[in-house]
Image (cartoon, rainbow, N blue to C red; front, side):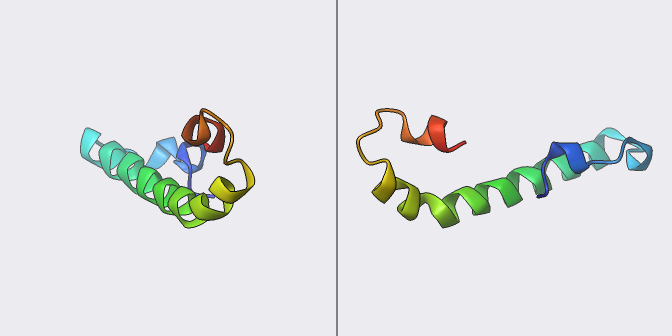
Length: 55
């Protein structure tokens, strides 16, 4: 899992490094969500808050 908890503070030397780490974590999480969305939608189709529940 490449979420924000995996960011090592000692490697952040500037705001640019932090921004890159946050963007890469968001990209990974977005891909993992979109990759499983159809399966989730089929299972929880009647849920009024599919995206929030999925996150």
